[in-house]
Length: 251
Length: 251
Image 1: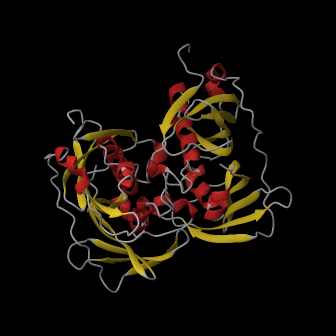
Image 2 (image 1 turned 30 degrees about the horizontal axis):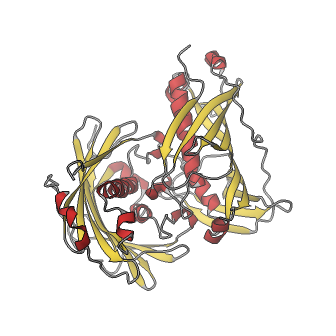
Image 3 (image 1 turned 90 degrees about the vertical axis):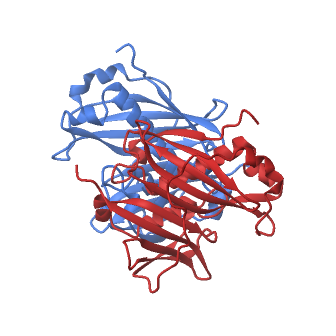
């Protein structure tokens, strides 16, 4: 166990083909990277999807919160580092630090991963993975933990959407980063030219599938300027999100 | 000029977060990589966007054709190699070889890049870049050149679509790989479980912009089983595509 890396780091280069309209890493792409480096680290630690599957269980991403000072920019080499903050019988808390081209910290993220039983889809027991206590790391993650998100009724805007082929991932569910795009798309391009998403929280409730029809509904919270968004299937809530923006610095 | 690399190669690893529902590299992601490695190579050769901009001109991707035996798979290390087949005063032909994890060739692609004048948007003259003749490479690209695509009337299926924030790229146009997704989405998930896109051709006619409304219209060609798709704005054709599929090998 002495060789394990408590902190796993992955480096990236933001190419033109990957940028959004503001010539930055898009929030959805950041979420994709968060999932990617989590998977890599869990595999390296012996608690990856394959290891849990041998135990009849699997990891399900339950929540993400991230906060950034700015996003990686076109042509910038940036990195994501991840570590396990803690775990108990049912879930694990995994954090992230995002660094820019000079190695400076530009953001942090927190995630919660729940282990569930493959057959019953009920919370499973992580107690067979007691060696996890040796990977727990006390590196600081100075952003607030994600809170419960409460939808606001009635929604100020609703957009219908049906999930096509290109939204479906390796597990035959809708790609988690695609939900983030749908939520980001609730505001217009001009808004993102003037503001950037400074904090984003998402709570995944139920998986959506190919060709399912949903409504993407948003309301600005009465206090502060958080946009609360829910993605709703006819019979269940797919996910809830809270988006906070800040004006872009003048330059 | 002796140090220039006539063939530029980029290696990739297909992570779970990047896979499609068939656990493969999606055609749209292949197109994104094709654009990415083209940009890298052109930059290295001194004919990148910045070099042309100094001359008041810019590269516009006009056509792509690719043909694959199979797509890179989940967890596979694959590569794209690119070289210039030829150029004349107005456009350049850039080809690609796609290799799988064992180094075996699994596909090829051809692209046509036109140089246009930034102001007039008319074809510009590449004659100031005569050193390009030294980078021309005679590596073989044994797939047919892309032909002109003729839309078939009336379309058998049409889907309306409006371009949201997440579809917009670094140049404030719709991302080229997003058109590929819209075209792929004309067929259903079950079709892609049984067939794979063996050859794909796309001709880019006009740029689309944020919040523009289009119709994605497709018809199966009467001979063969090519699906002909056009993305139509009210006043112009955005792009035309020809999609060929083959049954997946039984295993």
